[in-house]
Image (cartoon, rainbow, N blue to C red; front, side, top):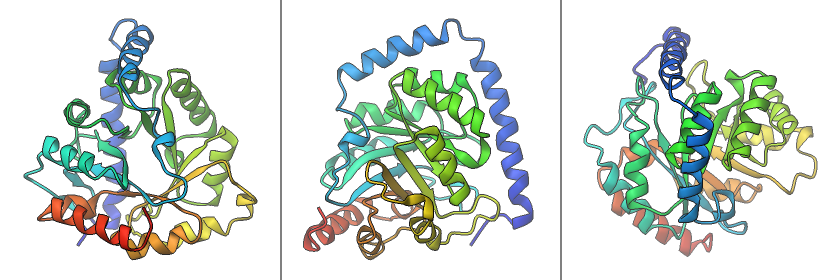
Length: 283
């Protein structure tokens, strides 16, 4: 059950964006942001794997497993979340988990940038930072934190800002997952030159999840003969059956958060998924 009404959705988005402006203002006071970001990024890359997208197997199913304590639609999902333990379990299941997504938004997702450091101490898997990234300052911060990839949400960024933040991120050695919800935003992602595109089945305006969002985008005329991009299905995936259907349509990567976070026995949940994927010859 949703903890907020549809009338509250825009209000919560407004509060998040206002909060982000305050965070950005504090971060902007840091000296030599670019220099610090480049130095830290160089240090982290020296001991990391080849990269986020390169760690995704092309001919098998890949899962980006998420760490989040809460969400606007569910409220607190896991009040006893042990980030270090979860990171270790995800790392243990790298046969199908190709990366870890970390929610760092504090107001509604109860996350923190410091959560990234906790994950990095436990796992060598590539890390995606999920947050409402609106400014260059946040991109510099992400590079300094040592993440491999950041999320840029097309629906809250104009094309000019999206291009600017995308180019800055890639200049700093970060990969970018550009999140879309419809065909128009797919066009924006293509205009930016995005190679890594997330299709979010959750509508930000109403918080409704509809897996047909992914199917509709796959049928878009804009898709043409796209072969050099990685598409990620986000939200609403809770079984190997869900993944198998989309895998047959060309989607091989799935971001799964709430399903894992609400599990009472995460290790068993991951073991069972791994076994089923092996039985179906999907990994």
